[in-house]
Image 1 (cartoon, rainbow, N blue to C red):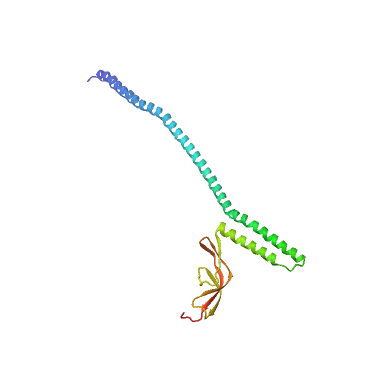
Image 2: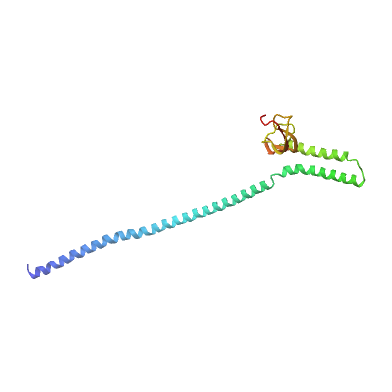
Length: 203
């Protein structure tokens, strides 16, 4: 091959190389243009998600604050109910306290007048006590029970004294020191009593 042919062929070879390089650059440039178009779309999507997250977080904080306020309000109402639960009972007792005050005043007036007649004062106190007991039983279910003469029952009675007796075959309540009370069907205070025990241990 002559020098001229070689020189003549070189431009062709160089031309092919330039075309290949240009084609490669064009192919590389096209995706870059697509990626450039995709980047703003991705950024917009991220911004949208961040906005939704911020909104959801704000709603969560609001709900949490509302729940906390509700919990505090319920606790306050519960505490108030506990503190004033006996209001109705006390309103029923207050008039009876008024009766006691009037009875005491009447007794004091009798003493100042040097009166020895206490029968009226005693009857007045008995009436007040009866009214109080009836009110508590009828409206509130508080019932007093007598134990004298009844068989001793540790569920109902608390023995403060015991005495042996030949007249009994079982433990029997002889005397009430303090009467017991039911609240509806439940014993809320056992009676404090004196108990007679049989002398014969076998019995």
